[in-house]
Image (cartoon, rainbow, N blue to C red; front, side, top):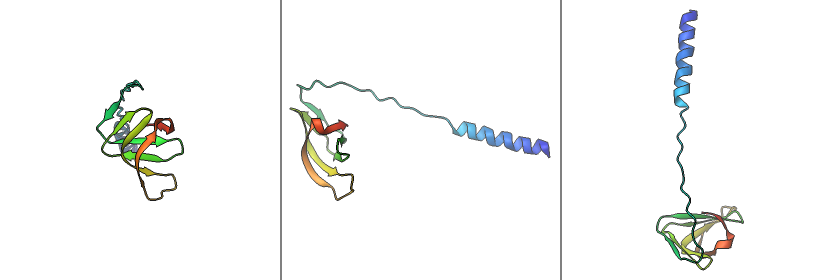
Length: 95
């Protein structure tokens, strides 16, 4: 009986240890010169200082201290999204 219990515990602990494999991915960060225009063609989410998020599904252009594109603003109160065409780069804390 003890051998069976030990075998069951050993099997369960082995299965759990195998299930705890971590997969990590690295993000490559590139600096952008502010004097150059930058075009990003993939979807972009801009997180703003006030807690709201602007989602640009068709990408953005960053130029002259602003982020341009067809976006939708979702605020922290979860009100219906509002259309946005440009936001100041100073208001963005992360993209």
